[in-house]
Length: 361
Image (cartoon, rainbow, N blue to C red; front, side):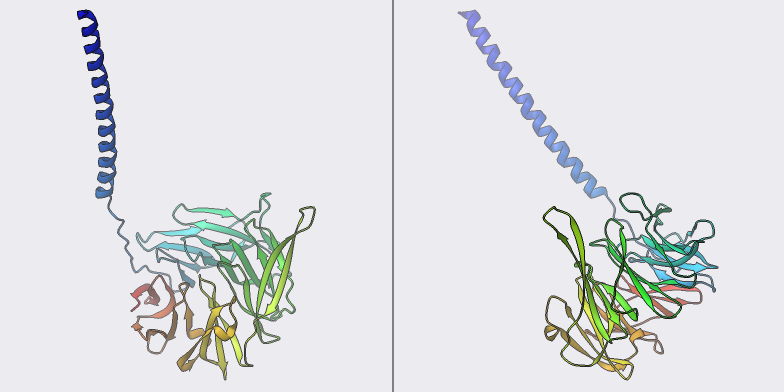
């Protein structure tokens, strides 16, 4: 009996010790995990973003700024250079043998740059370049076939590219020597096709970031048009792409020009009077243009003086006063030098071969 009691007591003690050990380990693990998390969180220092007024050569052409101002790009003697504004290091982007830089453009929401190179066979090849890794990759489709546009002549050039980072759709405008233009569309798989527009008198182009519609100026018919593509499946499941081009219906016969689009798919149209913009009409293509907002400008201005940012802010630049004014808030910001562009709440301008950054008011 005594032996049975001893065995029972020791069994209970063992269970209590084991339970206590599990409880201790569980609490210790929980405390350690929480403590580690808090320690990492408390000791992690936010990266300090700095900006240095980097120098660019006097013969630099097509100076551009990345979306957050970390990089400045320009062409020098037909060579693409990229400068890091934090450490002022300069990178030279190499091209293939006998190829030349035809066009380049920063992504609207990342520090990647899209590059178009024209090769010795008068073809446009597309590349993306990541300056943080100094890596350059050619755009290809799912079969690893390069994305290429074959030009009609050596005088043809890439004049503009409108792209959506949301849908990965890109429209490329090729300008011919005779002033006519063609537009090519590439999708998320980098498959490319020419858009069959009613005519080739094409002005400014832009894209809806979310819906991926192309919006462009038809110079011959003096209309603003929208290009949509839909995928249709037949009974066998085969897919066919259907392209529809329609004119945006406005309520009057005023002359209009396309100013741009923002990341929320708003379209911005300038009402032209005597070759200058007197008001700005903007809204969503899903709604009737009668529901769009009409912003009357305090005074008429050239189209080139109007800046539409990705976030939908509207600015008027005054080169003679070296100022930029927000049309909605009337906040005016002075800057120094020759205006380059507006990116990430800053004005960038070139002064004495330096890129000067000024915070917008």
